Image (cartoon, rainbow, N blue to C red; front, side):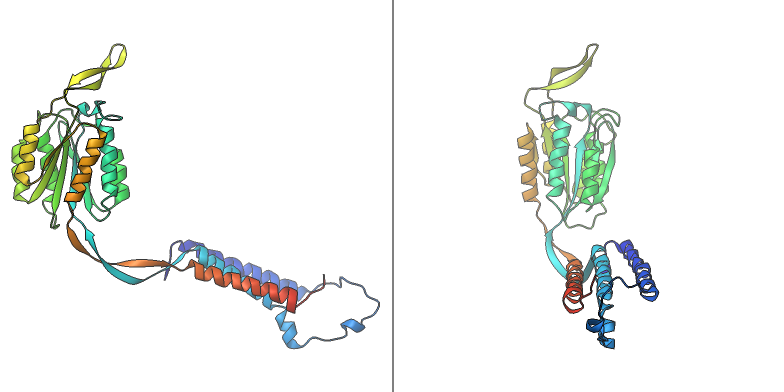
Length: 328
């Protein structure tokens, strides 16, 4: 057994001064508080047992307090272990963060929609290791593959445009994602590459990066995001930011080739709903049954200590007001 908040156990030291105060009052004694005309009714001398019993309520109260402190320290037991079958694979979310992702054919815009839906995807895969790579004119790893969902979600929320040189280096973005997975020992490794443009930057050709991914047995699902035809895009003008319609250009043939080369699939998302459906379809396609090592199953024990504390308090009241009656 261990405690979630072990530092709270230091509160047990409060019992020492409380006990010392009680002993001090008993040794000091009290002056008579009641005057009577006849002592006949009080001539009975209690036995040693009854004299000892008058200290029991205090002992019970101290015991109840000690048990309550243990209870709020949250005792837990991890003796039970179990093995489970899970659907675990390694996934890298490879996201375009070029300024064109600010287009507003998605709500609130392309990058905002991509982030929100990716966060839902991350939350729906609790046993997978997932990483995040972003690219524009260059690429970098936003978060290495991990099972830490809180970190992943927080890092995804921090993804934004304008932090790196603008452009669309699809090859570099894919190569960086492959680098995050090439040494993985997972049986299934997947990259979800999302972009809204045409490759125009980078030292690595997208086709070359796709061949590298194929060599390592990494499947790449490609997603082209953008409405058909034109899309509203915020443009800085001398009169402030104004929204203008801009032509949507996505190299779908390239994205289809990357997916075909690696054994993946190409998708086209034209709005939030379609993008959500695409992630849902990928979620269903990538189910790989694996056995996870045994892990502890924690059992909370605070209720046991709390119930014992309640029992001691009830017993104290019973002794104090029923068995050991005391005149005021």
